[in-house]
Every structure is written in C-alpha cells, then in structure tokens.
Length: 384
Image: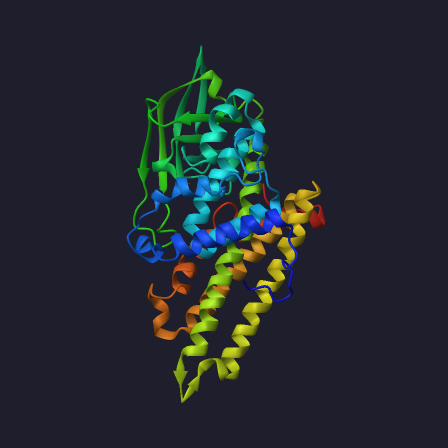
C-alpha cells in the first residue's frame, strides 16, 4: 500500500480487516479479469453476491438491517480498494450503498428498511438511483419527471439518464415532482410502465452498466414513497454520501496508476538503464506520490469529521473536487511514462484515465464543487 506518511499505519482492527478484505477481493477477483470486461462493455455481475458476503456493501449502515455497521473510515478504505480495481466496480458499490441503501435508511419507513436493506446488503438485490435527466444534470431542481396522486397509487411519468446499474437493478430510488415538490420513490423491477435502455458506445466506465430509465404511466403503491423526503435537499444529501465515496475511490485509482508507472519505470530500459534513473521521470513520480499523500491526509481527516458528526458538505465537495482532478492528472502522467505501451489495456493507466474523465463529471462536476465551496467561503451564491 502506498502510504508515504504512514497515515493508515495504526488503524483499529475492524478498519484493517475491512481494508484487507477489499484489497484481497480486488487482487484476486477484479484485477485478473477487469481489462477484458472493460474492453467488452461488461460488468462482472457474478461478483455482486461475493461483494455482499464479504461485507463490501452498505459498509457504514447499521447491523440491525443486515449491514456491516462499520465507520466511515472503513467505508472509505473499501471504496478506495474497489476503485483501485476499476471505477466501474466502485461505482456499483457506491450507488448500491450511498444512493440506494442510504436513502432508504435515512428517508424510508421502518417497513421499507426491513424489506430492502438486508437483501441489498448481501447482493441479493441490486439498486439504482434515478435523479439525472436528459436535459437536467447539474440543474437537478428542474427535473421534469412527475408523480401524480391516484388513490392507492402514484403514477410516474418521465425519463432518467446516465443511471449506473439501471438495466440490472431490482429496485430504483427515483426522484420526481409531486405537487411541485421533489420526493423520492421506490420502483421495483417489473412494475408496468417501467422500462430501461442500456447506454452503449461509452469510452469511459465501460465495465459498468449505464442506462436510461423510462416511466410511462408507471403505477406504484403509495407505500413506495420515501416518506421523509422533502424537496431537492433530500436528493442532494444522498449525493453528498456518494461524493464521499468518490473522493476515496479516486484515491484508489491514483494509487493504481502511480504503482503501475513506478514499476514500469524501474523495468523499462532505455539508453542502457531504467527510465526510473532519469531526472524527469523521477520528478513525475515524486509529484504523483506527493499529490496522493495530500489526498490521503484530506481523507483521513474527512473520515474523522464524518464519524464525529462534524463534517460539512462543502468539505466533502473539496475532497471530491481535489481528489478526482488529481487522479485524472496522475493517470495522464502515468500513461505518459508508459509511452506507447500506455495506450493498451495490458497496462492500467489508460483504463483509469478514461474512467476518471467520467468520474470528474458525474455527481457534481469540478466547476459545481468549486462554486459550492466558493459560496461557503464568500457568502455569495454564484449559481442558481
């Protein structure tokens, strides 16, 4: 493990176990197969139940609902390892945990928690999160999907876009306007009027299922509304949980690219000696390690704040903004160190580079995170 400042050297035992479990899973099950899955637009769905059995889903949610009940440091370390394998794997677990299980736990009824959380935790069910629409991403408050009260049911109409896990999900947490107010709804697979279309021809997150969700006079029972949701704020609270996992995950991507570049530079001989012996290559490697170390320091403190209940959403935005941008640039530099070999899937940097292009955009772009922080430190709102 890359840990130049020994930040994670003295972790409590349960955090170490969670970290080591995720690391072994990635080394044994993900890394040997992921290049082929990435190249062929496939998600390794056969590994979902193993992820559940190992306690890699809903890590920081309570044991009473079948979840591991660990802290946010453990959750972050698991996300870091999963994205060291591939962004598609971490995206799956992040959506399942932060965008499906978390909103059901936070905004759902006791009946909903007992019905869905244990199955989602063990990978028996897969979930997705439907907020983004074809015309509305950053401007989530303008979504057009509607819910209409109809006796014992709500009728949903609308389309959601860029939905991770969409076509393989057993349950969707969908955000729609009910009487003009954004509310959350649980929609199960097979509900009449609910269909999905998988998005193809992606050059990023290729080992992840990305879909459109379509709702045409989709009737769902009234019991399927998340009763504690109230306005866009509820959806943004969920996104904040996901941004936390992305901030950790992107660190794993950066570490994978750095380790690959370091190992390659030690072995690649040019002009009679390893390229790692050249000043310019060493400068690149030192810069990469320094940026990784800064990101680790941010995340270690962020996890402490989150576990203490003191974290601000702007602090999570800063971590997401900084760490994803850092991981993207490290992947580019690592690809450069690999030379021509770096454009092939025989080496990991190009895959992480392509993935980070999407991660840099989704669940809050770099610019949106910047404006969130800017509003916090100046008191002036620079966007609607």
